[in-house]
Image (cartoon, rainbow, N blue to C red; front, side, top):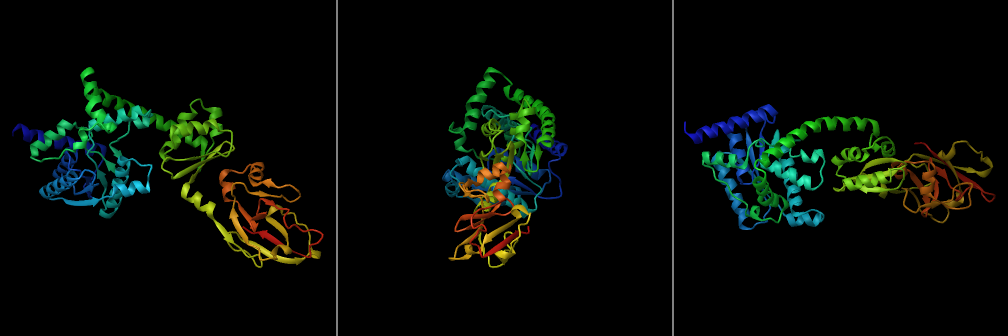
Length: 454
């Protein structure tokens, strides 16, 4: 057995052992392999095929590098033909994506497009995992990138061997080891010319920072990997502690941040770890805690998916799309008969001589039937900023927000409360407060009795 063959077998045995020891893959379902045509992805596809896994290759063509993009695609076709692997190719329009999401960088747009397709491909193929070719040096670069961003323990130990359905079977290997494996198999790979450019931060770390670190501190890359390993052990203990705090301060979608500030010296770290998976930033967390004892502040996650609303020391987390939908709900109603949606309100009409005051609070409203005259528009809607009403028993109007504050309503209670309006004037807040508008008076002949049934 010559040296090249021995190295090939050793590389494959090390890969098999790593996959089995970390339980990354099994032999019962296909594996989708992200194939760019570079050394890492080609080696990954080759070694998984040679280890007997049912592989399906997936190549993304973003058409950002002209002829090079087409060259990469052709090379992927050649590799898959050589390895007898099915290849799926997807062409993407990055500029259209960035028009739809202007806050995304080119790199982020490509990443999101890529992984959205991969998820669909996994479902379509019934695949067990998406295998990507990240190796040990990629992990070192990610550590330095996140360190420069001020990341915590989770960020410094990112690029895990498994992240949901994504697995990294080549994580133990270096770039040189991977290229040596390809040489032994006689497989070629392409090099992205943009890798030589320092325009991107990762390239600057790869091309300038790491060579300098290795020159000044030989073995720097290996030392960083040991640090990551040490931090991973600490992360397990750290995560257990955070989960313990979750049980103390979290109830459903609410976090008692005022209580947290009173009791915890490291409230910022705790809250950041609770909110980090939802894409809130450390700066936002600091602002939340600075206003922990107030109400009304609203924060949006960086991906726009979640809104955090601060109310009386409690932070409520709301799905942004659902929040927007609720805010836009508005229904025309007819007070000549019962209202069945979105609330169930029983409507009856009586002569004023029959009036008897009931002790049902704001669950019942009495409205002078003269309010029905003139073809007025009656609507049930939710609270809007600036809404005012004249509460029953008062002569002066009051901000609805002040009424909510007096009742110590949470942000979600405010948002979900219904308001009955006549030509956009508030006549009743069902279950909350009665209005003086069109109340029964000396000139009333008939009145409407409105009862909230749900």
